[in-house]
Length: 106
Image (cartoon, rainbow, N blue to C red; front, side, top):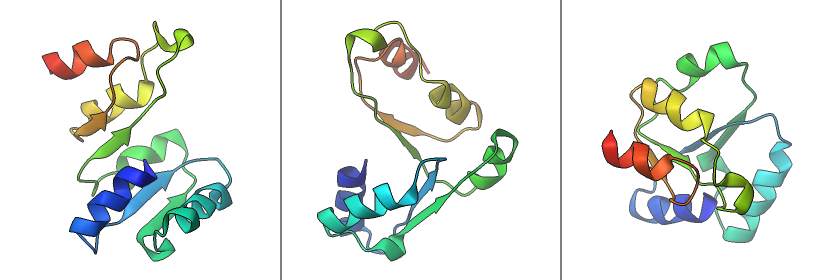
């Protein structure tokens, strides 16, 4: 996702990437350093589920990249449905559960 953001940021220098995660932010910032992404363009915060609609209200789109694997053949990313339900467009990869079908249909 950060490689994708880096390409966007090259075209739109004032773009921002907002992470909602409970993971350690240092992991993301370390990857930003390796990729040469200015950490000023990255916003990371933890969020409870009930706060997600409020925290995503200004998003132009969301990235939903999941590594296809055998265990993902029959899975469906919950966040994809939640984001689409809130009217937030998603950019995602194929090969994970019913992602292809849902994106093509809706």
